[in-house]
Length: 72
Image (cartoon, rainbow, N blue to C red; front, side):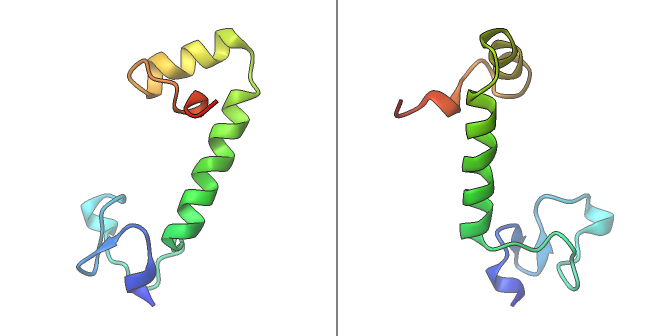
């Protein structure tokens, strides 16, 4: 089951801090498909925000890019 997690690589988590990187019994487990669906949902929420807030989020977290506008 651990091999199905989007963040588990070689039995270790690539997203958590090294001291908490064991994939065994991880409460953050999710499949790659679920991770992609969650990301798409988050970007949809960002796209619904006012322009000033989108600009702030873009500059702060996305290196000036706006991935929620791709394909629009």
